[in-house]
Length: 105
Image 1 (spheres, rainbow, N blue to C red):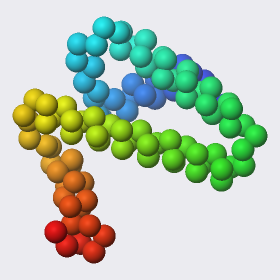
Image 2: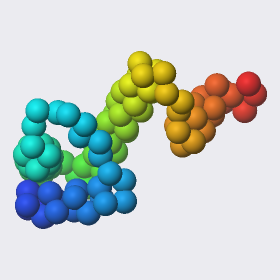
Image 3: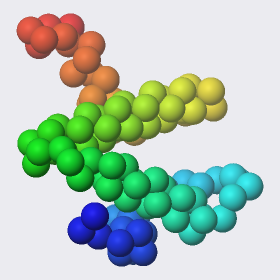
């Protein structure tokens, strides 16, 4: 892998400065969670060493897309559970979905 687990953790933390994660009251240390995820992703990347560059990119894109979708679903569920309105970004995404492929509502 071209990045160490520790370097990935640092990058993750830097990204979080722009887009903070609400760890709420999880019974886990934030850095421990970050380390766990960085370790898992480094292992995943190492497992793809035999993949072609294109296959690696497609796999990482597919995994990223799945995680973004999962995050969106969990975010909307959480807001609904607490009776809170959607933020602008989420509302814009869901508005595009409601309009459908032809752009009609």
